[in-house]
Image (cartoon, rainbow, N blue to C red):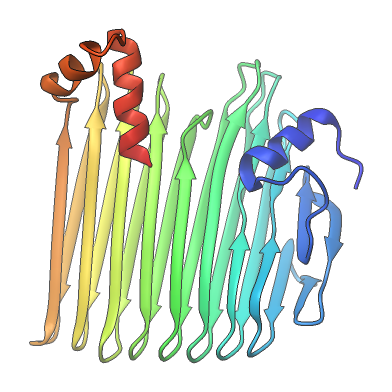
Length: 307
């Protein structure tokens, strides 16, 4: 792997990696394959019909990690990738993804990732995805992730997505189908500033008996940035669903929250919560009384909120 210092910094920001990772991994750099490794239980293959990879995780695989980071370091590059994850029965793995864009030029740089998760019976996956942008150029840094989730009986998928710096525009779309006794957990953290825009669109179908979904979005909108959060849960059987959107709004920012619930079964138990507000004055006063400036106090509150 021959990444330069800037590219290695991006890798560290999005995946916490400072060297070649242990285990299975696939590193995509500027639209092409940079490095890859498989293990006895996890195989990564290049798609033959379109850009992207297929990741096969054998039944019964335990305590293994898969890294699939993407780095975009060329201004004007528009990258599109399709990644499919096939997780065997009773597997229990961690998948770490994410995309870092460095743009020092005047042209737009963009990465669109379409991910599909296919979890077999009783499989368990934690998926961690971080988006990050940097660079001194005037060109925009754009990320548009699309995720499709297909959860088999008794399976469990926890998604943790974070975007807190440097991305000018993002449209995150997630669709899920949840079978009997399966569970989908989504935790989203977003911070926008300047004139940035972030849109989130979740829609989950709880089709199975005793299926469940828990969707939580926490966001901070600063300056003149705009955010739009849509969350839809369809209860089509005996199920439990919960969606929550908490946002802090600052300066001249704008936040729209649209939670939606549809119960198509008498035993569908669905809850939604949405709260948008500014930082409470008493919180600022308390921290400023400890010697912090107003700006420092705001930063402490925001950091604590997004943890």
